Structures are given as C-alpha cells and as structure tokens.
Length: 371
Image 1 (cartoon, rainbow, N blue to C red):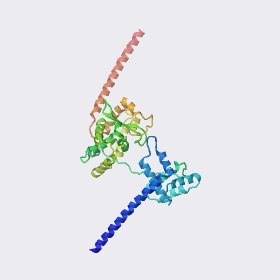
Image 2 (tube, rainbow, N blue to C red):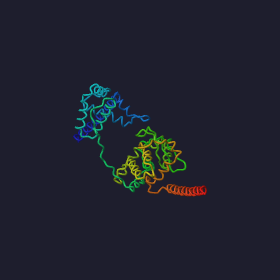
Image 3 (cartoon, rainbow, N blue to C red):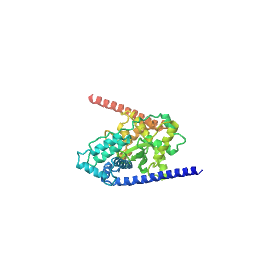
Image 4 (cartoon, one colour):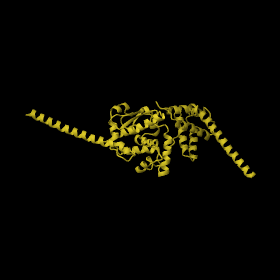
C-alpha cells in the first residue's frame, strides 16, 4: 500500500511540475511577444499592412510576432525590443551580405513543417517593407485539399436538423444568401441593414473596416431573414448581426461531420454562392454584380454606392430573379419570384404592343405626307 501511495505522490508531483513548466513557458512567450511587438521594424511592417478605415487584423499581428520569435529562436539570436530592427539595418548597410538569406533557406529546408514556409515568408515581408529587400523568394504552398461538393439534399437535411437552434439555421441562411466571408457579414453593425420597400430583400451595407478587401460594399439577403436577425439582435443586445458566429459554425461543422460525414464550413457556403452564380448567363445578370455582392472587387467598372442602390432596384431585381431561388436551402420555390417574372412578362408584352402601335402610326403619317 505504501508503494502505491508513493507512486501516486510521485505521479502527482510530476504532473504538477509539468503544469508549472507550461505556465512559466506561456509567461515567457508573453514577455517575448511583448518585446517583439515594440521592435521598430515589426511595427513598421504591421503599419504597412493596415489600410484606410481598416487596421491590421489580430491574426496578422499574432502571425508576425510568432514568425519573428520562431526565426530568432532558430538563429539563436536574443529576443529583444530591437533585434529585428538591427538585422534590417545591417541588411541596409550591407546589401551584398546573404547571411539572413542563407539562414532562411536552411530553416525552410531542414524543417519538416509546412508552416515554416509561412513563417519564412513573413520574415521576408518584414525586411521588404522596411526597405531592406532580401535576395530570396519563397513559394508558400496551399493546403492542396480539394473541396468536396455536398449534395443539396444533404445541405437541406443539415439545415433542418432538430439539434440545430433557430439561430444556427439563420446563420446558415445568412452565409448561403450573402456569399460574404463570415466575419465581414456577421460583424456588420445592425444599423447597416436596410429593409427595401416593395421588394423581398434587404441590403446590408458592409463597412470597409470588416471587409477583407477593405472596401465598403453591399450584400443582399431575403427580407424575412434580415427581420429575424434584427429582432434577435435587439432582444439579445447585439450591436452587430451575430457576434458569436464562430461558436455557431463550430457546432454546425461538428454536427455535419458526425451525422452526414461531410465537411460543411462557412467558407463552403461562399464557394457554393460563387458556383451557383457562375451558372447565370451574363445576359441575365452581369457577373460583376454578384462579384460585388460577395465582397470582391469587380474586374470591370467600380463599386456601386449603397445609397444609389436604395433608390435603384435593378440589382435587387436581378438578385431576386436569378440568385435567390438558387441559393435557398428550403427546397421550395420562392413565390415572390414567380410573381415578379409574370409581371416582367406582362410589361414586355405591353411594351411590344405599344411599339407596334407606334410603328403603325408613324407609317400612316409618312404615307399621308407622301400623298
């Protein structure tokens, strides 16, 4: 019994020691990141990444600090508030010296982790944006993972699953109808949602501060969905459409994997939007229009102003006619669309009839003048 007791005590002591080491290491990392963040070269690099109306993202900041720490550890240099700046200044003063290039090349080649390419590329960026370009290029390879299409019946089954709350379902619909990146659309302030009269749509004015491309642009979603999102935001005190979108998508993705063995992410819904939009003939809907709605920059023309869209429903009519029925996950045809198509047919028929009457009248007048 005493031996067992002694073993358990030693085991507890070892576990306590591991926890103490981890706490100390985390504390040491925080101190190192704090020092690196004060480095002039790092601050200049991060400042150069920011755009008007959109500061540098937290992901970029964390990635830069981590890359610098890894690089300094790899090259056995001290982590101080000026080490990176000193390296940059040395390269400026000695442009033909290739010490840093060799270190990066060896680090990339000797490491078995693909993430090292990303770290090394970030270091290249720090030097380049501090006017000390290195004589080295690094190709950062993608994941290579191919997106596997999910059949529409499975998507509908996931959305209608009883284990998902109404908020989960609205979040899926929001991503399906908007085509935007999840952070941009969910972190848009509620006052930027405009319900457009005499339509079935709402326009969301996505600000540049949350857009990945740092451009203010419109998104369109069904009015009923917008009303549900606004009602929930008011009831729960949200200042943006949905601040807990990350946890919602984590739960949606886990359920889709567990029950249907598919990888359903918010980015998949964005790819689905683009795939469906690409099938719309350009004679029906200008491709630039749905590209703008996704938050991307159009290849031709310019970004339209949201306020002109509120008075001009051309884009909304295109969206409701050609996109909305394709994007819906309910499996039902949207009834307002059939009414709008019928109205357009009637208007075209009336215009043709008026044109025929006008042509006959002009012909008659010409005949009278000649006689």
